[in-house]
Amino acid sequence: MGSIRVLIDFGSTFTKVVAVDLESEEILSSAQVPSTVDTDITIGLEEALERIATDVRIGELEKRQALACSSAAGGLRMVCVGFVPDLTSEAAKRAALGAGARVVGIYSYELTQQALAELEATSPDIVLLSGGTDGGDKKVIIHNARKLSRCSQAVSNIVVAGNNTAYDQIRSIFENTGKQVSLTANVMPVIGKLDIAPSNRSIRDVFLKRIIEAKGLDKARTMIQDVIMPTPSAVLEGAKLLAEGVDDIPGFGELLIIDVGGATTDVHSISEGRANPGAFMRVGLPEPYVKRTVEGDLGLKYSIDTLLVLARERESPPNLDRITHKFGEGKFPETEDAILCHTFLTCLAVDTAVKRHVGRMEVMYGPAGEILVQQGKDLTQVRCVVGTGGPIAYSRNPREVLKGVLFQDDDPAVLRPKEPKFFLDKQYIFYAVGLLSQSEPGKALSLIKKHLIEV
Image (tube, rainbow, N blue to C red):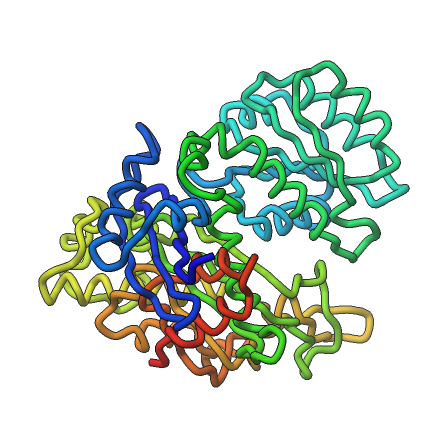
């Protein structure tokens, strides 16, 4: 087996390819070309491989060993259906995001005909059906299973992760419906306890068995070894590896990753998010050690209008509205004024996304008076922040952009990192590290540690 590995990300906008040498732990070449998922995804792949071949010889062996992830054709689109919004519905959402999905709908309580019509119109890749603790309420999850069983084939893949005492009835409900149903462990088996790993595995299994073919990625599998996970899952795998280390190679410890893109801004934290010393108690569901949030209204291309609304609350650069309409057209800033505006909006996206991701301290009132409580993760002690994605990686001043994650004295209730080091994934290889970690974790960790740039 040769030392060269080819790693691929089929994105909705670009197909990215990187070739690495496992022996030297070096990036030999990288390329990105417009994705061709709407016609034949292998056209874009072949073009990217041809560009790589100008720097390094890529033979049939290297192609057959290549691994890929994908967010093409809208990524893994999921709808979550639960019982109580702050409990099972929220638990299902966290499970979906942790599996690398894009959550396009969340429903609670009994599904109505209007909700069902909306769900069908969304045409999700997977519906994650939850509801009730084990041995608890069965009425709602059974009602919702019946509703989903009568949906058109726009809803064809369903993962059930709710009250397990309802599973016998749920199996009967979906029998002979033509729908592909997987039953797994409850995302919230008891009140206040999350168990999302089994549903993550079931979601990934559905992705590998059914979604790849539905999105036209099956043809790519005739050229390479496999498409093994959604792109956000690959980034999460890379982040977890970097935080924890492997064997005798230490990791960075608890960390935060901020990924600004054209459509969304994603935040990943690998941290226990322990209770703040000032809190008397914690409220809400327990936070997962590996947490991902996706802000669909914070992107430098498709979500530019939302950013402009937020910008009006700040002291913004002159002519911001006039200049930034070109960002929505996909044009990269070239003039000094455009670069200034682009940097400002990237900072705004980082600031807003991290504020939504981290926990906060709140005052509640009870019989004994004021009580200080913590909602969400305390990330004040996180010592490593990594920036990735085009708007950060290609920024003229990435450190200034990453400062948007920092704790703010004038808003002390928001539990942001206080004194982290900043690193830049300049070559955008987190997805590649996540893919490589499945077979060569030590090499993958050495690769990312070697190529991250401290800023």
